[in-house]
Image (tube, rainbow, N blue to C red; front, top):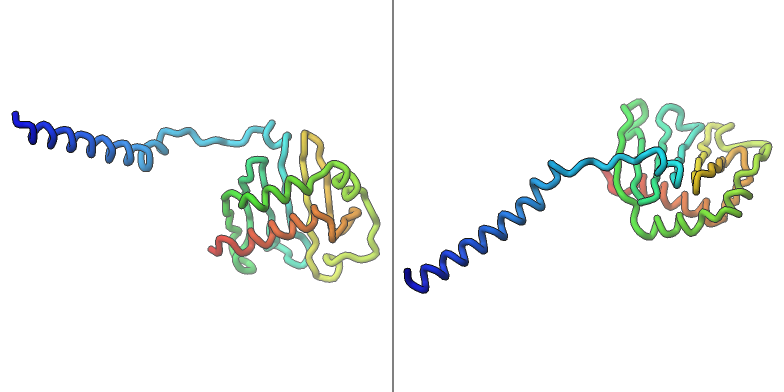
Length: 171
């Protein structure tokens, strides 16, 4: 064999190996990877569930966020349509803002029950309810029934999450 033949065989083998590795990693490896299903203990450690209620009736949106930033968002594209579930990961900035805002002292203060004179949902408006689990302790924050600080970091973080879920990615 000539030197050129050996070089051609080496280059062909190297290119073939690189293409094979690329195809394996991008196309086939996912078939054998086991799906990671959140366990009950991961929900007990940290989760945030938000739901709208009131004037939206049967087409109210809701979401669930886990510690790693994955979310499930349930919404109806139009009134009377079947609900759609969208899943994904929150942007890093939203995850950071949410985790910074969920201070135990604020959660305790804003989850204290109140008796409001009127709520948005009483007059066909929309209210929001959040169930927050941090380190196994559950807190309920409701725009109609708990001492919510509408200008506080928790409420602002939730508003940004709703905006993101309702507008991005626009399906």
